[in-house]
Length: 115
Image (cartoon, rainbow, N blue to C red):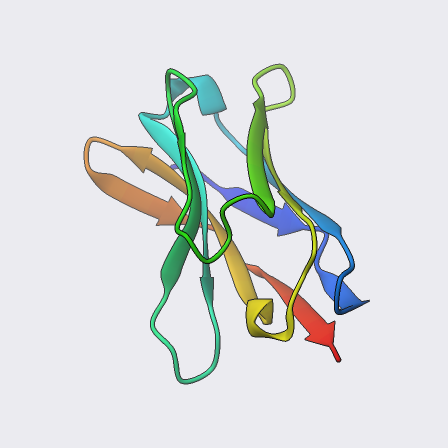
């Protein structure tokens, strides 16, 4: 059973930066993919970063060039570097571990961007 623990969220001003971390209880190298999604009140959950086992990354247009996903296999940790943050980035951010088509999510970390 994979367990994921996110950290690094907080309150920052518009234009600021945050780095989120996701510690996995199992080897992140064993995942088909790792990634991050977010959910704001009243909105559907949307993915914001995805990294395949081979390291291929994908981002939606809304965060492309501002967010960067990375992985440290030695620490079994995935990161999300977020720059130039905007109020619309306010959400709970969830890490996910993908294996055989199923996603396991962590409990999330809150990110709030003030104007």
